[in-house]
Image 1 (cartoon, rainbow, N blue to C red):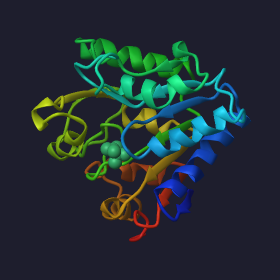
Image 2: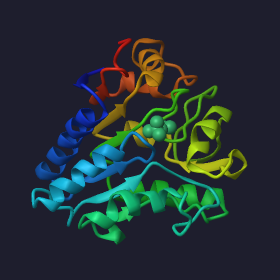
Image 3: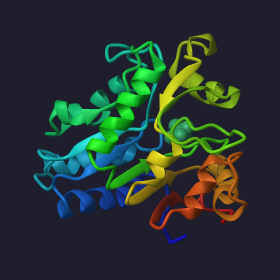
Image 4: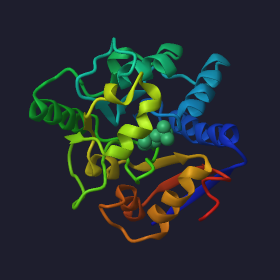
Length: 243
Ligand code: PGA
């Protein structure tokens, strides 16, 4: 494993430092493919990218993006969908072309069809240059939940109980959290040329320690990153406190 650690004092500093990595990728390769993520962790990073774009420092005109996952059953107009999240928190504020942004289609009922479409799309794009990842409290990446074996391609997953609980904060009630999602698989994530994992807060410290210093096991999906040749981990002091 070649892992570089970037340590920010707090969430804001970590977000700016992680945004430096994404900005550098765009400057080096203006038509790069960014693998993007949703959740609380990347919000500050997206804000920082928007500020740089507004300052005239960052051009998304040729950037392409492909997101990790989407809730099954939710479409772009649902304010809990990940397509909505991306539009609201990044895409509508920068000059990325909508037709160059990809998120699994949560409204496609036929899981096999949607997963095959997404894998073909990823292959057509040549994989991702930089894959942004958060990490769940149970070690999930994307919606690859702890399991007996690592997943491979894009697939439909039943969300773990802990994930449903963690994501309830974004919904009116726990019952409203969708139970299934489409997610890029482990092989899609591992094919990224560079992985940028971000985590903040003390509640992530334990899983970060497990993922990066424990055994590589599908029970901790993020532990597979130990086998990736180029991982950058941006964390704040609290998330890094047990490493
Ligand atoms: P979070 O989610 O960024 O909201 O903590 C991370 C994840 O569940 O992958």
